[in-house]
Length: 129
Image (cartoon, rainbow, N blue to C red; front, side, top):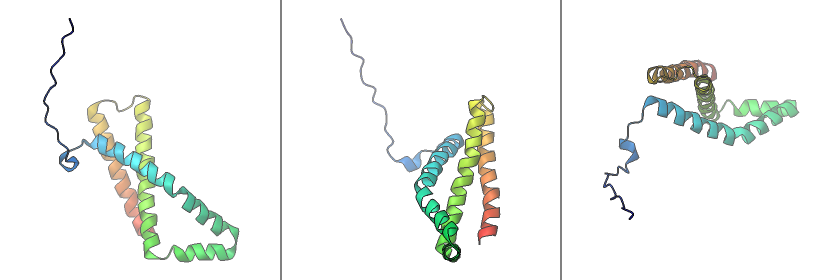
């Protein structure tokens, strides 16, 4: 005779803004989101590179556009995405070879990634603006 297990009546929290994710999850989610952003923006960046390398007028046009504040803001956001993806990628590679596998070390490396991104972004903001 097969006995069915009763369904557990667990509470469901569908409000995602009340869930507090651990710092490891935040860094991992941002790593994926920054990778998607960098992938999607590649055609535009390659077009700007092609245009700037095609002629002197193309370079001047791209350089002029880069002086506009919306473009500077976009460059800053893309730099943030790139550096976060880079530093978090190094962290993930280190974890793949079994470095920083304990929870305490993983949390520490997540904080290091966020601090490295913040420090690098201060330099980028200073350089771009």
